[in-house]
Image (cartoon, rainbow, N blue to C red; front, side, top):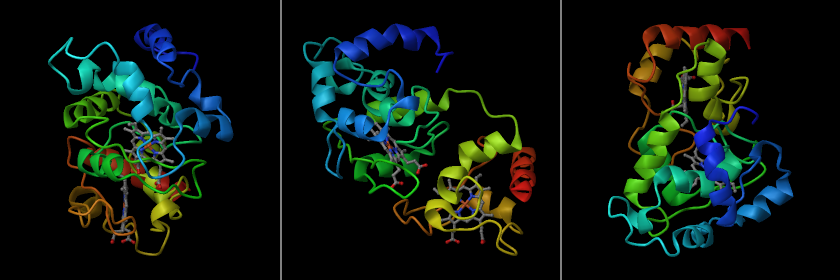
Length: 228
Ligand code: HEC
Ligand code: HEC
């Protein structure tokens, strides 16, 4: 966390004054992190933080919902304690850079129970807490970071949350080392699977067109998986 962009550093005092944790999510221990965010179950528990952040600022700006707090500010105040200031991920929440919106919207609106790979859970946040517009701004912020340039970092960014750090299954149980699993990798990545139902953990995979991953990048990912 030594190289935070100055814009984020300059926002920190505001966020901390607003009662929001997140100064060093990478090193929070489990108990502290979960207690700080108040997220202990599936119910929406981000409301208190947001209310504190928006108090007094309602109607100052008409261009975003919830009192003019931008999606990026909301992300830093509400989500970064688990997912990292730049969406780089911590032991309490996945890496989130370059998010797929249909899928990510579903997770935020519905929450998730947590997995054996994470020391916390994902609460559901309704539109009363984070408007649709703010959610789009959160994805814009998380999408603004540079594209990874190696097979390993591309894999960690785009595939790891679902297939596991070593591609042996992860939360979906879909093991990419099974014989034949990689034969149709280009087709799988381009077309996805069951893309209408992002809640189906074991049968949903998003589609990534060439604006997300070029053929060369998919090949780099395949080459990396082969080394694992
Ligand atoms: C208390 C920690 C915590 C907070 C706060 C939190 N998350 Fe999460 N988030 C998690 C965990 C843990 C998961 C994985 C849950 C699972 O898969 O069962 C997750 C999963 C996700 C995913 C799905 C990632 C993937 O690749 O599967 C998205 C998107 C997400 N969170 C966005 C957000 C946003 C946006 C916020 C703020 C509004 C937020 N989260 C706040 C812990 C948190
Ligand atoms: C949101 C979760 C998710 C993400 C992200 C994801 N996948 Fe998948 N992937 C799945 C699921 C679930 C399946 C099984 C789908 C089915 O066949 O029902 C799958 C299937 C596959 C298969 C076919 C495996 C087989 O045995 O037929 C390949 C290859 C694959 N994924 C590669 C990738 C690569 C490469 C990436 C990153 C660019 C990626 N996936 C990102 C969830 C995901």
